[in-house]
Structure formats: structure tokens, C-alpha cells
Image 1 (cartoon, rainbow, N blue to C red):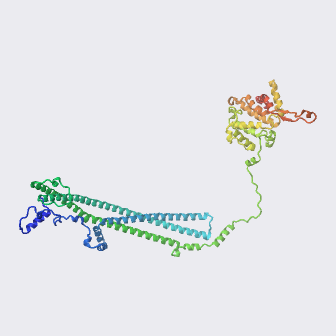
Image 2 (image 1 turned 180 degrees about the vertical axis):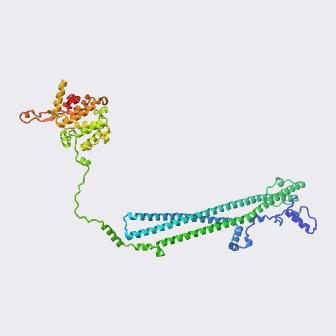
Image 3 (image 1 turned 135 degrees about the horizontal axis):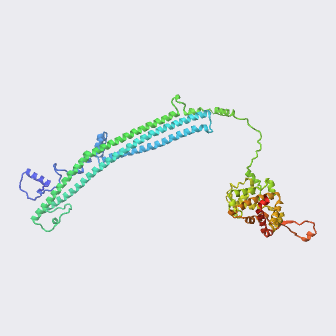
Length: 617
């Protein structure tokens, strides 16, 4: 049967003392329940909450605690023991390692950026010095003593740049080593932090299980106490409110047998809860002992070692950096101002060695030997010779609207040049086989462009290079336009009626002879021009099966163009004419005469073209 520790203690006291009188079976002295602390053979529950902590009531006030911490911190082992004893010591050690890791990271970042700055500065200094040295002779800069000392100064800057590049490489190496130190430190810190969380969770889980077992134990112990007092007829005190069975709070009177059975059941439940509570207490204490006696010192020691390694490593690398920095600054200073004269002059001495007067004299002497004597006479007028194209624009040789004889005298050509160029271009570019040649008109804008070119300088016109020559109809149209704008047509007006009369001759043979005679009576410019034109049109007639331009079609096109309108005389005042010896004034009539004779104009051209060989060859 389960016996409460207090009940066992009371039994031992009864056995050891003299028994005066027997006690009642359920007297107050025999109650087997007490909340007094357990004996040495049992585990003290209160020790769980005070385990491995410093009790300020036992060690003194806060000043004594601070003094104890200061004394222990003077030696490494004492510092580790102190961290194991104070609350949050492991967190302090983790935070210290984190500070060291962050410091290393910040130092690595600074050195990395400093290395980039130094490297860029050094390379730009070298690049600048070399480019200035290379461009010294090509640029308009002074030579002589200035040039020599300037080049020497640039070389000193180049040396400074090389020193900075080496310094940047060394800083970069230190930065990489500090980065590796930071990463390794942070990795070790995180591993120990995870281990700490793992052990603390194990302790927390075991303490939570212990707390549940303890609450269950106290509940069943209170139930046992109530049933025990109720069985002995005692007044039940106001205990802590617990969840009790309905049978215990039942107001109906219980028989002694029922009360005995209830007390026995409550005792058994309390015994079971007590065993469970002791079991969890043993596990919790073992877990805490393992953590505080083994794992915590190990982790604190590891964190101390990691912190020492990070601190010493960071201090070592910073010492390397300061040594390199000082060495670089000293090297730059020695480049600028050498300690020994054998190493060359200082930069200040280089500038002082420049002799401006001597440089100026040497400069003048070097050019004086090659210089020519100054010419101080007046400068003659040098007329600008303009291009032929510009001259043709200023002094154009117009061909449109200019008398045919005048054109040929001016240009010294037997045949007008515009006629020859257009005919050759037509024959060369397939115009002889072009359907509707001379009947189809070209584009007006291109025609006017060709007209402007011929009016400017006919000799300079190259129809093979002009874009407008791509269309043969543009060339034929400008040629017809030239014939139409002649002041006196190709068939002169004074011979107009002769050609019309010859064309009206009924007898064909007689008509050809009369036309031949009229053609031979033409002025030389008109004859040569007509002969060349008819030769060109004769070639077109020979290809009429392809170009669809017969003799009749060409006669219709060129009749009015070549003959124009007849000359008529008008008498403005017949009375005055009778009283005057003045001859009547001739004038060109309107197109009414030409329109009446249009058929015969076409017949003239048609007949001449049909008999081209007989008339001209």
C-alpha cells in the first residue's frame, strides 16, 4: 500500500519514542500527508528552479556580485565558468561572437572598397602619365629643359601609380582573407546557436512534462486528503479548488464501507501520480545536469575560442593593412623626395631645373635656321576661277526661242547640238522600237528640267546620265518643244506658201520635184537641220512595225511643228495707205491660217519623208 513520505516519517518517530498510549487510527498525528520538504533520500523539487544560478541572498548585494564577476573575468577559465553560472551567459557569448563577425565583415567591406579606389587611382595615374608622355612630342608643348623635366615628373607619377596598384592588390588579398574569417566565424556561431536551441528545447519539453505530472500528483494528493478527512469525520478545510469526482462532493451521507473504498481509490491514484511525477523529475534533472554540466561549458568554451580566433585574426590582418599603408605612403614620399641624391632629384628640384630663357633661345634658333626671309611687298589680286558649270549658269547659251541661224553661228555647228544629242539618245536607248515614239508626251516636270539644262549649256548635257532620259518620251517632247519655239520655223514663213503649193500638186512626180526644189532653196542652217531630222525620222519609219509610227503619223506630229503659221500682210488704214508711199507692214497672223492648212502641212512633211532618199541622198 502506498505510504506518503510524511506518513513514513511519522511512523519512524513513533517507533523511536516511548509509546504512552495507543492513538486513534485516524488521528491528526497519523495523517500520512504533508507538504514539507522531502528528506535527503528524495529529490527536492525546489532545487529544479534554483539549479546552477547565483543566489544574491547568499552571496551578498549587487556590488559583491559585480566584484565576483570582475575577479573571475581576469582569467580565461574563470571567465568561462562565470558565463556558465550567470543567467544568459551563453547568449552573451553568442552576441560577442556576432559582434566580432560583424566587425570582420565591416572591415572586409571597407578594405574591398578601399582596394577598388586605390586600384582605379593607380591605373588612371599610370594611364594619364603614359598618355601625356606619348603626346608630349606630338603636341605643341615646350621642349628643352622644360620638356626633359616634365617627362621626368610624369615618370615619377607613373611610379606612384604602380605603387598604388600593388597596394590595392595587397589590400584586396587581406580583404578576401578577412571575408573568409568572417564567414567561418559566422558559420560556427550559427552551428552553436542551433545546438543551444536544440538543448534548451529538450529542457523545456522535459520541464513541461514535469509540470503536468506535478499538477496531476497534487490533484490526486488533495483528493486523497479530502477522502481521508471525510472518512475520519473531520471538517474538510478550504483547499485549493480542484476538479474532484461527483462522489466526493455528493451531499448524501456515505457509509463507512463506501468511505473506506473511496479513501483506498484516492490513495492508489495518488501513488500512481507520485511515481509518474518522480519519473519525470528524474528525467528533467538528468537533462538539466547534462546541459549545465557538459553541453553549456563546451559551447561557452567553443564560443570563447571562436571569438578569440576572430579577434586575433582580425587584429592581425588590420596590422598587415596598417603596415602596407605606411609602407606605401613612405614609398610615395621617397618617389616625390628621395632620401639619397643617388636616387634622383626631388619633384621640387625637377621644377626648379626648368630654364625658360634658355628654352626660348633654343626654340628661336631651331626655327631661325630654316625660316625664309619675310616678304613685305603688296599681295597681288588673285582672281577666282569659277567652274564651267557656274559660268554656264551666269552666261547661259540659250537654245530655246533663239533663231536657228544665230544658234549655229554662235555654237559653230552645222547641225544644232540639241537635235544631235536628242536623236542619238533616242536611237541609242531603244527609241526606234518604242511604240508611239514622238506621239506620246513625256512628264512635264522632266521636260522643263531638260529644257533648263539645254538652255544653260547644251554641250554639257549628258542624256545618258540624266534621270529624265530613262523615259524616251521626255527627250522627244523637249525636241518638239525646241522646234515649236524657234522664232522662224524650220520651214521659213517666207517659203511657207511655196511648200503648201508644192504639196497641192496633183501629179506625184511633179510634187516631189517641186518639194525638192523648195528644200534646196532653204537657207543652209535650215537645210542641214531638216536633212538630219529627216534622216532620223527615216530610221523610225523603217521600224514602224514595232513603234507603230508610219509616215502619215509622223507627218501629223511634225507638220504643224516644223511649218508654223503663214505670213500675211495687213492694211490697217486703206485711205492713209493710198495717200502715202509707205509699204505695208507684214505680221504673223493668228493660227487660223495654219489650222486651215494643217492637212497640207502634214502632207509636206509626209512627202519629204517618203522621198527622203531621193531628196537628200
